[in-house]
Amino acid sequence: MPSFNGRTALALVSLGTFGSTVLSAPSGDWKGHGGWHGHNDPFSNASWPLPRRVYDGHYYSFSTHGLTVISRASKKGSIDGYWEIIGSVLDAGSSVIDNPGSTDPWAPDVHKVGDTYYDYYSVSQFGSQISAIGLATSKTLMPGSWTDHGEVFSSDPNATYPLNVTNAIDANLFIDPKTKTPYINYGSFWSNIYQFELTDDLKDIKQDTAVQLSLDPVAPQPEEGAYMNYHDGWYYLWYSHGTCCGYNASALPAPGEEYSIRVGRSRSPRGPFVDREGVKLTEGGGYIVYGSHDFVYGPGGQGVLSDYHGRDVLYYHYVNTILDPTYADNLKLLGWNYIDYIQGWPVLSYH
Image (cartoon, rainbow, N blue to C red; front, side):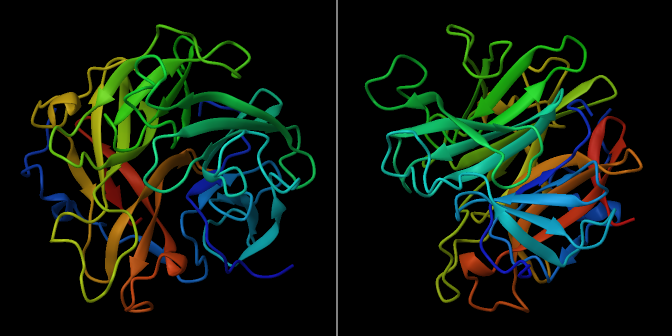
């Protein structure tokens, strides 16, 4: 198999069944807690990988573009590369959804529920709100085994609220470990991040269950890529903030306007989520867990998985400014850190 050398959009899969007090430092001092240097994989060349660990001992990655490329880490039990491309999810050549972006699905979110893998993907065009979230399923995760079920829901200016003011991309499945209720988080720019409850078969939304989880009130409202996890009584909402891509080394975004990873927490998956200063995410809150530093630029597109030892891992894509001084989208790499929870707040660790 060829080694992984394509573009991806972060998704690393876990073959386990689904369900896996304020810090004293100021909210922006995310470097001050040790281990903020991540594991930076120079072999992943991934414009957004989604890693997951699987029953056979390997981690698998699902990626944006290439009809959702599936890659496998060569070393069992390790997220570090090399990654081998083994095929794609939508091997028919496109999604069955009627959308101009159907031949280039984005942002896969893959989970195992029971004996089935669920891949929630997005179809759209850059800068458009006419978007849809689709679903493909598989019993084995392997190429050639996926069934495309098409649209779960879509957004456009003529839809009913909130789908007329949101953007139906960047889906994230979350099943409440306490109630087993399934939810789908989604959104990018356009009123930011919302959540619906899903039907029991995970193939449709329940109408009139929408809640808003976050909002940056300042235009252009650059929040997207929600991911939710649960730990010790708290629900954590992670998201990316800022300019994700299209970087130009000679004209980068103003400092702080590039991608960064932020988080808030709540006692309920429905919110309200607050940052560690107590500011609601729907009122512009959210503290930076990981941002640009040293040779890491614009980390985002994050997700959380539990490794084989049960420890939470935050993974993300980023620009390595040493290996790629051009800041090219197609040369972004996979990075990851362990998560420690200190007084209920996530802090990244190298070890």
